[in-house]
Image 1 (cartoon, rainbow, N blue to C red):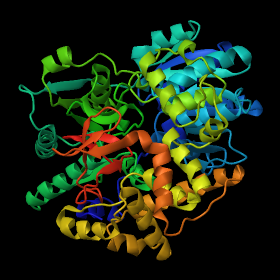
Image 2: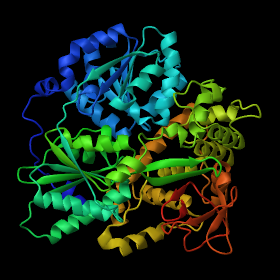
Image 3: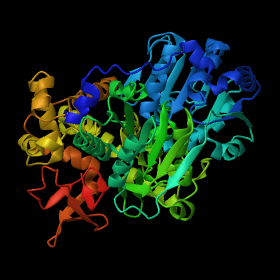
Image 4: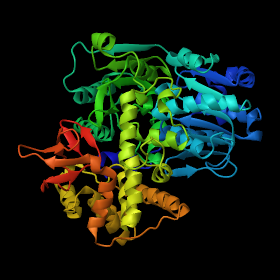
Length: 628
């Protein structure tokens, strides 16, 4: 574990008390509490209700409990969707505490590959993708009496499809209550879409926030952000800092760098507690961000845009906003998924600034010019459905019997070209027939919570007799970063990593890591010695178990190919043949489909070997288009 992480998490830090108020008093101090009666009445009187509440108003944690107290759980569950995994877990944990039960009993959560609910669960938090899978099994959601689509303004692809499905469902089920919550901006649009339903407003608890812009554009926003954080720490009155960055690697780099710079300032400077937040971070580490800093110390939370709206962190007085976020963007013409760092929208910038005004008057340091904010940023973020690959969602909708996707009642329809491209991909994988209808294979593929190429690869592996290995490879792909490179031991980490490299490529390298870990009885110290993230491997183990249970359910054989790697390579190709690239005599590779120049990432097992043909899992645009 890198030095800064040990420092942030290793000690049993005695943080300050979160609040001197009892849980009951904390609940009563939320802005929504004054409107409890009116809210319950509004839900009773309106089948569909749009609720506007700023982050911190209490809507996410309280509405479900108020409705449970009002008797809505006597004839079904209250389901509440969140756009992000971290939010679903942390909110459920808090609500269980308030409700006075253990997490997974009356209050639980479900996210992909992790179900923490039980037979007694009446309030269920989940990602929007999980509710979509439930509709796949039961189109009437007959177990639920209330569905709350929370943070709907985030407009994830799953939320957008849920809009259309629930709009039809409320007509079929007059007893079902639907609540759509949003930040202020989109309320009118949501109301118009849902039969001009009523809007219920909860006033936020906000203090003024002073906005500071840079005079000139910043050439290196990361360095500028770190300098700003240290400047605040050394010169501003007490209060915690929230820094927005784009992803895990950037956040880990920033935390390491802050840690080193703080060390360089010597002992006389007050301590700065550095806490990262991104979705791959384990939940016990994530919950540290809610703990107040001890007296005389300050904490800086370094987060992705998850902290824009999904999480409420008290005690933040300073926000540092470089103005960027990572977005998944799909180019249907090239069939390319790229994860790119893009400027945020004005709506996001407002949300970020608002984080500084929760506890008292705050400051927001925008690391861009005022004219960039006014003239270059788009007013709102483009809904995901208009910019990402629609393969998975198309397959799911087909499995629900929605065949005419072009006339589905989307709030903002996806580009027709993107839908056609998704149908072509599914046809080439054998999931759709000539008519665009689901095949037997397609129906099986829809049962797995995986992207279509991965579920095709898994089903092909059953016929090829290598499903045991492919299960492991898929589970490893799902878990994100497996290796880590502490700055002070990069050469050592690279040596250890290279030992696992397989001449057949990264998929088999991942398999080799898992098999070596398994041979050592899933040991933690082994991970530490080999610079492997033990948490990632344990997650892979959980994902594998879940996929295995779906295989058992459909009586699909799990067979090992032993050392026959050709079978494994055939299975991978069955799912990803349209991701083939050929070596370019000049430099790098060219994709087969679009003849686009792409490169092997330096961290790949194949970087030194550069074979004539490769198949990649995805393309990531950083300094170049890299295959991985």
